[in-house]
Image (cartoon, rainbow, N blue to C red; front, side, top):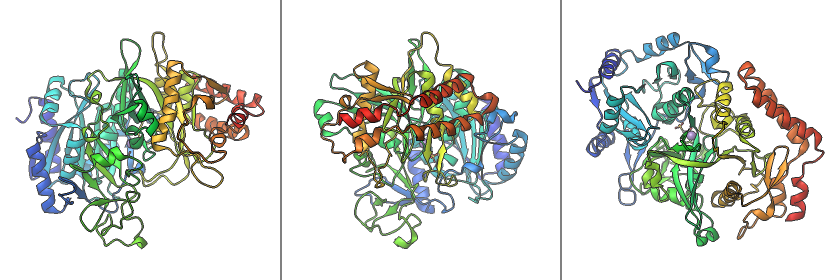
Length: 597
Ligand code: SAT
Ligand code: MN
C-alpha cells in the first residue's frame, strides 16, 4: 500500500477507477523527481528552456490561450444550504455538483499519469498548518506545487499522523472553457477542478484550499484565512513589527511584500522582511495577539510591471530556478515582459513572432513561480512554527479618486467595516469581472468560502476582553490627480506610510479625527527626499464630504445585500459614519493640509 492511511488509499483507488490513468505516481518531493518532471516536460514541449547561462534552471510554460486566469463564473461553493455560500459566491447543490463534474472526470486520465501530491500549507511542524492531497494529471501543476508548498514525503507523514487532509482532485481535461469547473465542498473538505491548468484554478493548495476551504475551516476553528501579504518592518533599533495587508489580485501585494525602503530610510537602518506575498493564516495566541503564518512556500507573482525600479528584490530572485508562465522571450532566450526594460522581445506569450499589433508581448496576467527563500528580503521567520505577531492590518484597493492615501480605523469594529467596504477597479487577474469598481471586502470577494455576512460576524468576534488586536488601516496608493497621473509614487515610498502606521501602533504619532477615520498630520509623515507635485499632498488626503456621503450610501446598499446575515454591529457602525458625515459641512483634513504643506 502506498500510504499507511487507509482512507487515503481508498480515495486514491476511487479516483483512479473513475479517471483511469495509465500510471499512478506518488510524489516524494525530491530534487531528483523534480528534475525528472522538468526533463519530461521539456520533451513534450510543456516547458521551454530559457537562456541557461543567464537564467539557470529557468523554464517557460505557455498555457492554452483560452486558459490564462481564474474564471470566477465557473468557481462554485457547494454547501447543502444555499444561504451558507451567500450572495458573494456561485452556489450549486453538492449532489448536483458531484454528478456534473464526476461525469467530466470519467476516463479523463487515460493515456496520462496521475500524480498524487501530498502537501502541507504552512511550516511542517506548525500547529497552524493544514495539509492536503492534490491528485492531478498535470506535471506542470506538480512542479508548481513543489515550489509553492511543502510537498512530498514529509507532508504525507504529517497527514498519516493526523489522519485528515483536504481532498483536492484536478484534471486539465480538454482545457475547454465549456467543460471547466472549479468546485469547492467545504462540508466535505474537498475540491474538484476540471478543465483548466492555470494558477489558482489548478494549483489547488493556493486559492482553493488556503482561502476558500481554509476560510470556512478557520471560521469553525476560531482563526482567520486571509488574502494578505505579511511583511516585517525593522526599525533602526532592530525591532521588527509585522504588518498583514489585503489587496485584490494584481494590486501590488508582491511589490509591497518585497519593498525596498527609500535611501534615507536605508541609511538610518530600516529593513523590510518578506514573510508572505498573498495569503495569511492568523490566530490568537495565549497573549491575545494575532499570530500569522504564510501557508505558502513560494510566490506565484504577476510578471508585467516587475522591474529594477518597482521590485529589485523580485528581479533578483527570478534569475534562477524559476518557472515563468505566459511571458515573452528575447532573441537570446531570456524571459521578458512589459515594464521590465526597453528591449523588444522576439516571441510573444503565445510563441508567435512579436508583433505589437497582437497586443502586449507578455500576457497581462503572466506569472513567475519561485521559492520564497530565493527572495533577498525573505524572512527566516516564515519558517517559525508559532507564526509572527501582527501589529497592523492594512486594507487597500485601486481607487483613482475619493479614497485618501491612508486612514486609520477608530477601533476593531470600524476596521472590520473598513475591510467590508473595500472596493477596487478590476485587474487582469480574473478574466470575467469587467472594468468597473467592484466591492471586494477584505480582498476576499473571489476567495471567501462562505457567506460574507457570517464572515463579517466572524471577524467581529475576535474583539473580546484580553485580546490585543492589531490596529486597522486603509490605504490607496492609486489616487490620481485631475491630470490623470498618480499622485503618490508608491513602491519603496510606501515605506513612509508604513512608518506612520507603526508610529500609531507605538503611540509616537497623533492623528486627525474625521468621520471616515483618523488621518495623518503632515508633520508626522516622513517626506524627506520625496518630490511631490504641487498640491499633491492636499489632493492625496482630500476628504470630500459630498462624495463620501454618496460612497457611504453605496456601501450601505451593498451591505444590505447580506440581509439577515449582516451583523447588527456592522450596520450600527455604518449608521454612525453616515450620521457623522451628515453633521459635518466639510471634514477637517482639507483645511489642515491646505495650511500645513
Ligand atoms: O491565479 S491565482 O489565483 O493564483 C493568482 C491571483 O489571482 O491572485
Ligand atoms: Mn492573490
